[in-house]
Image 1 (cartoon, rainbow, N blue to C red):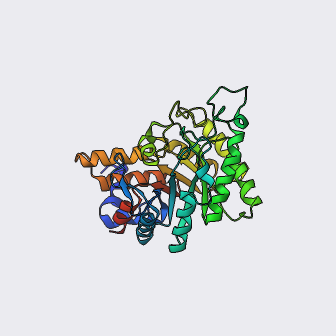
Image 2: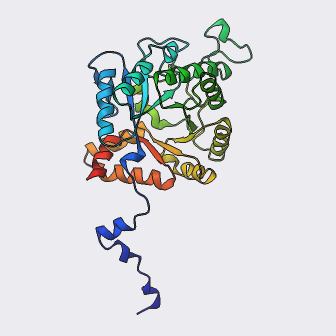
Image 3: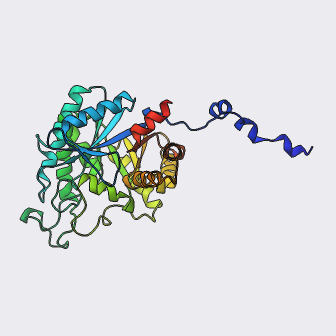
Amino acid sequence: MMSDMRHRPRRLRATPALRSMFRETRVSPKDLVYPMFVRHGEGVADPIASMPGLHQLSIDRAVEEAASAAALLIPAVLLFGIPAVKDAQGTESFAADGIIQRAVAEIKRQLPDLVVITDVCLCEYTDHGHCGLLNGTTRKKTRKEYPEGYVLNDETLDTLRLIAVSHAESGADIVAPSGMIDGMVGSIRDGLDGAGFDRVPIMSYAVKYASAYYGPFRDAAEGAPKHGDRKSHQMDPANAREALREVDLDVDEGADILMVKPALAYLDVVNQTRRQYPEMPLAAYNVSGEYAMVKAAAAKGWIDERAVVIENLTAIKRAGADIVITYHAKDAAEWLRT
C-alpha cells in the first residue's frame, strides 16, 4: 500500500451523518431576509409574471405574508413600495401616509418581533424611474453645469434623509439606502440622529453594481427608468477594487451593516468585503434575475430547484455573508426544516 493512500478525505464523506457533522458552512432560516412588494388597495395579491410565486401585495395581504415568513423563523422582511401616484420629486416616498409608512406601522403593530427593513430610494416613486432627482425638473433643481436629466447627487441627499426619517417614525427597525448616491449613508445618519432616531441602524447597499440581473425586480417594483440607465451611479460590473473603496466610505460615514448586490455573480466581492471588514455584519442580495433563472430552469425540469437554491444560499454564506436577502426565503426555510 502506498504511504500517500493513508490520506483519504472520502472517509469523512461516507455517510449523511458524517457529512453533516463536518459541514463547514450552514444555512439557517435565521440567516434569511424576505423581500416584499407592497401597493395600495385591499385584498390585493397581483402575481409578478417574471418572478413566479411572488406578488405585489396590499397592506393587509403583506401582513399575512410577513406572518407566514415569521412562522418559518425568518427574522426579517425588506419592504419595497409602489405608490399611488408618481411625480418628478417622488413625494410619496416620504409622505406620512405613504405606502411604506403605512405598511411598516401595520406590520409592526401586528408582528412587533419581526424585524422590518425599508428600502430608501426614489426609483419606485419618481415618474422618470431614476434613483434621484433629475437636473432640470424644477427651477430649484436645475444646475447649468450638468446636462438635463442628470441624476443630481447632493440635492437627492435631502430627499433621502426625509425618506429615512419618515420610515423610522413609522417604526422601521433598519433603513437600507440603495441608490448608490455619494454620501447617502452619512446624510441619512445625520438626519436620523437629528430627529432622535440614533438607535435606528443603516444597512447600506455599499456595493451595488449596474447589473443586468435586476430586470424582474423592475417589473415587480414598477421602477424601471423611463430613459437612460443607472450606470452613472451604480458600479461597473468589471470593478472589484472600487468596491472596497465604496465599502470604506460607507463604514466611515456610519453604516452599521454592509451589503453587496447582486450576490452570485459577485461572490469574489462578497469575500473581499468580508476579509476587509471581518468585524462588520455583511449582507448579500440574491437578486431577482438570479431567482427568476432558477425558477425558469426548474419549471422546465432542467434542475432540482430545492438542491440548487440551498447550494446557492450556501455559496453566498461560504463567501462571507452573514445574512442573505432572497426571494427564495420562504421556500428555503421550509426545506431547511426538513
